[in-house]
Amino acid sequence: MTVVTRFAPSPTGYLHIGSARTALFNWLFARHHGGKYLLRIEDTDRARSTSPAIDAILDGLSWLGLPWDGEVTYQFARAARHAEVAHQMLAAGKAYHCYASTKELEEMRDAQRRAGVPMRYDGRWRDRDPKDAPAGVAPVVRLKALQNGQTVIQDAVQGEVKVENAVLDDMILLRADGTPTYMLAVVVDDHDMDVTHVIRGDDHLNNAFRQLQLIRAMGWPEPVYAHIPLIHGPDGAKLSKRHGALGVDAYRDMGFLPSALRNYLLRLGWGHGDDEIISTEQAIEWFDLPGVGRSAARFDLAKLTNLNAHYLRETPDAELLAMVLPGLEAKLGGKIDPVGLERLARGLGGVKQRSRTLVELLDNLLFYARSGAPPITDDKARAQLTSEAKALLAKLAAALEAAAANWSEKQVEDAIRRFAEAEGVKLGQVAQPLRVALSGSTVSPGIFEVLAILGPAETKARLLAAGG
Image (cartoon, rainbow, N blue to C red):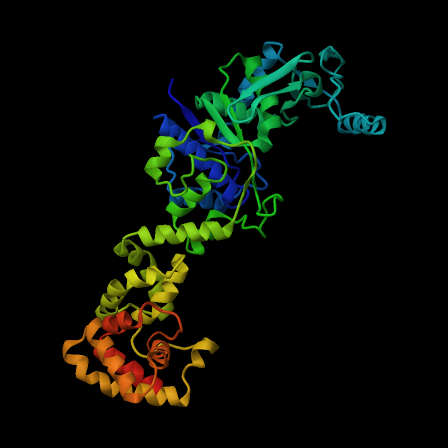
């Protein structure tokens, strides 16, 4: 048997972080078993489905590194096939026409509400002769669901779950206008796409009982169900925007790497011993459904940020530079000259050790990319440039000229230490104003490394600008 999974989002908004994890689990399971991972856009809600949302889903999955196999299936385009199955069930006596009016159904629900019983369709047209149908009323098509016994699912994550058939009413398959319902469309699409494993959030568990009845009514092969717990916030409450329940595109904009986000989402609800850092290759090798827990995972933005810092440090400098270069040039308002590019290439290694996201990396690299004195917008940094410090920097600019001929990290360090000793000040009294003058901040890579990369001419220009 070839394993076939599917990710089936509704294009009514962005690719939610919880949906991204569902896509990841489906992708990994299919890759682990050498199978197929399919993508289906469930766009039957025409009022809310939008082209921008579809584009956001496709773009988000591509950026996250979860390519699907084959062409994308669009559910709405298959409406005729869904209706065909409903009519097959009518012909086989597995479904029936229901002529109950909206008013009748409202009265039925009101009576059930007053009686304190669950609200469900009471089957009033289930065995009724169609000859009794009122004139001019377009019927819906309902499944003739089982009324006795239980529907049992051997869920690959939740274990055995069951429901009494008596609480499952005869769900609508085709609306009065002939359009198929979500429940019918999902079952038909899964069958026609040869889906073997339905891996999705446990908020769909109740749907599974109804969908399984439809599958059995058609005599189709039953998929393996695996309903994974949802993601909660750090406080245990349902994940919301205040916890970080944003679209995948937002995490990209915040400077997270797709490899880090994949690793983090993998560990939300699935584990492999004490392993925390798991490469994509290891994830494909190790991932299987028994490793998925039954408890809700808790999203922690701080943990994701720390994990991203690890992946940032492990990414080759050339790759990182390609990622941030467009943003650097956008901030500086033009192309960076060859001298600036060389400084960036030499300085990136030190800067990335102090950055947790691509956004931080970009900001921390700006002082290497620009020519001339960097702007100082931080009050703490500005406070370092006292009149005494400015005078000291002006003197230092002259003192460093002797090192220009043999400019290196070791050479400039020795020169600055001799300068501090000659001026009768501590090294820190020179180093901190120097750091601000060169980088515009009180935080940077090692100051002697910065000097070596900037070079004598650029260093002198920045020191004179700060000391003036």
